[in-house]
Each structure stands twice: as C-alpha cells, then as structure tokens.
Length: 21
View 1 (cartoon, one colour):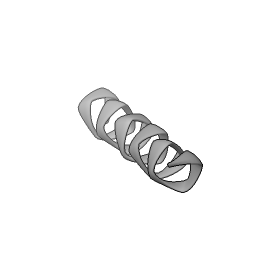
View 2: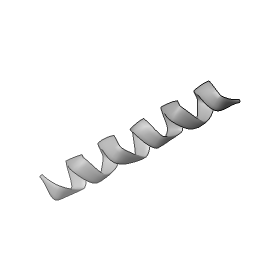
View 3: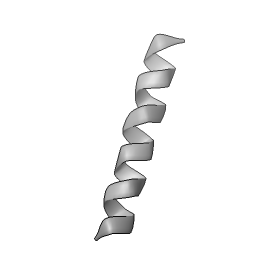
View 4: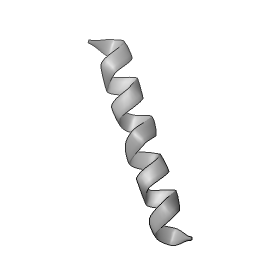
C-alpha cells in the first residue's frame, strides 16, 4: 500500500512538472 502511494505521488509530481513545461 505504501509503495503504491509513493508511486502515485511521484506520478502526480511528474504530471505537474510536465504541465509546467
């Protein structure tokens, strides 16, 4: 469960970075 949340968090951050760029 913890690993999945971390992956989800990283995915969200990646999406945000792509939106900024």
